[in-house]
Image 1: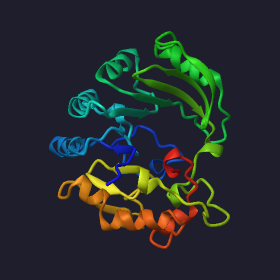
Image 2 (image 1 turned 60 degrees about the horizontal axis):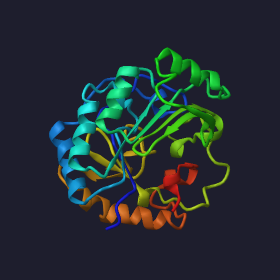
Image 3 (image 1 turned 45 degrees about the vertical axis):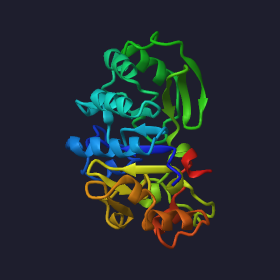
Image 4 (image 1 turned 60 degrees about the vertical axis):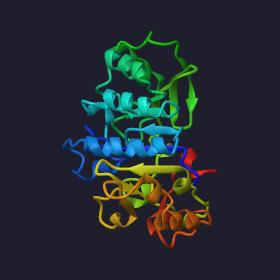
Length: 277
């Protein structure tokens, strides 16, 4: 069994933002907090450890992970169980401060991405949005930042042997997508997607309830998207679901740009590296 290089394990439910380019901007499902059951969390980590998982493990999907009171404990648990795995935090940075920044690094975060979302989707990225946030949070001199362009827009970056950090001012209309139609404010593709997608082969996604989803774009609370749930980690194992009939069928079809098993994918222009081999 070939393991994913990236696992999203959404260990909490709430996001504090309702961005227009995210399903959270159109639905209220993520406005209350709910933590993944701790026994379920440790069960999933134990199963990944038994498989000798060494890829990225991110504590997010449609949530804001730093709103969880136990996020540092979760990172420590992952590092203790899977020393070679790479814990990752994707955050909007609203509640991040210098103290939490250093606690995350001390706990073993291997990748930290802070995306400073603008208020309007058509706002062009600017370095001032990054430098202003760094000053306000007391992080301007935390590491020797390098400024430059990234896929999503502009960023301050830092890379060392054990950690990589990015603070990004994104260009929403160029870099973001409608997630297969679950975001109605962003346009659908003029023609069905013709490029294969390898997201189902390279990235596993588990929501706060323990449901393994087809990919990170799936928003089960939206009508028509519940069909893209592969199974429940509360009753099945990671290995059984990841290598099971449903996931294998999706990845075989997607490798040939066949969207008959997942019609939502025809209008998805997800540009993430996980979509490519």
